[in-house]
Image 1 (tube, rainbow, N blue to C red):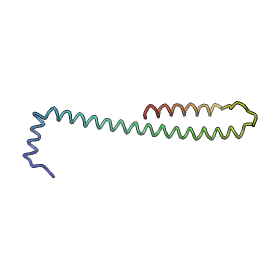
Image 2: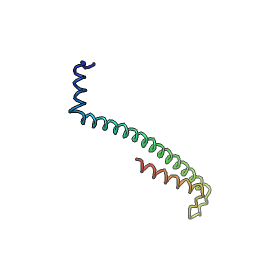
Image 3: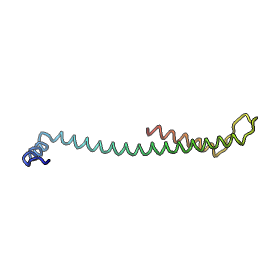
Length: 103
């Protein structure tokens, strides 16, 4: 429902005089809200991407662990990982760090 023209004119006069400071603060608050929403959306995408990477690295590492267990003999005392598995472990640590930074 539209306000009568007289009421709208009165409001515009108020915004131009006594309400100028309030109107400026309102406009600034709306702008900050819009920026914060945009930042929140960017962070959500970043967190979700990091979580996806974490899950992928965990899956690959679990597969590597199973593969290593099936290839090792019963009397192997120390677990020896290859370069590829080490790289996945490092990538997992980095993804977890990004997740913590953005969460």
